[in-house]
Amino acid sequence: MVPSIDWFLYGFVRKEAVTTSQIEGTQATLRDVVEFEATEQSEHPEDVEEVCNYVHALSFAREELRKTNGMGLGVELLCITHRILMTGVRGEGALPGVVRDSQNWIGGDNPGNAIYVPPPPEDVRPLLDALEQWIHHDDALPPLFRAGLAHVQFESIHPFLDGNGRIGRLLIALLLEYWGVLEHPLLYISLAIKQDQLEYYERLSAVRQNGDWEGWTTYFLRCVRIAAEDGVRTARGLHSLVSNDRQRVVGAQSATIAAVRLMDALPVQPIVTVASVAENLEVTAPTARKAIELLESLGILKETSGKQRDRVYSYIAYMRLLTAAG
Image (cartoon, rainbow, N blue to C red; front, side, top):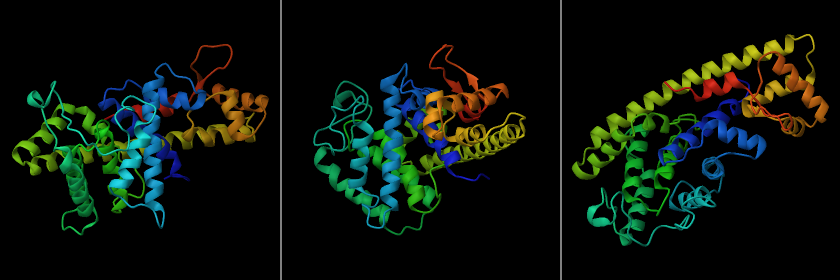
């Protein structure tokens, strides 16, 4: 639908990054992340850093998988991806990128009263190796089924001291691309999971306690459907919005080349400042300011900082569509 897949990748990857991080307790919103990228300032710097780490981790893993002689999708890649995810944020002291050699547990004060106790440390590496072999082994099950099963197995092994949930959900995106289901990570599964986190955890527990893989698979495929339908709806809305707004800019009496170029750049930088526009478009500050003013006069950009200096402008309608759910 669009000239560049980057239009959607920018927003969809960050939307998944924000949502998967919120499942783990962060408070950063998509707007916080996009504004931080434009201004390098945030009211929730630690939370934003966690989200940005997820974006960097996913980008690294995808690039590695596309290399002719890359690492391949396995334990080594997941460990390096985990290190990128956890460096410089909460949990950094929990040995980022290192498979655990101590016992961990979920819920409770100790393994005796925990909700779930993962395998002992001496079993973790063999279990991960077995999962890696299964990922690369031919299987009659459809890839969507297999992605869901791989997620449960990874979560149940719980190979790291922290950050397992985010890596486990990131694994779904990597598998769908690795197995050729999607060419790009446009399915943000965390959106559907976050809508009912309790059922997510209940389904995981049902597999571990009762072997209810069928119940998990039914739940997982429902999440896939919810995420896919939302993705299609969002993609169509963004395409329509950006196309119409671009026509308005091009048709404006005071249109400039810089203003059109700014409009074309907004889908991958929906929050801007004069400085960021000048840098990205390689124009002078007055030229950048004039382009922003034109888009502001058309109601495409809106000043959101309330400041007289270092003002911040947001593509409000775009951000509203991207953050809408359901």
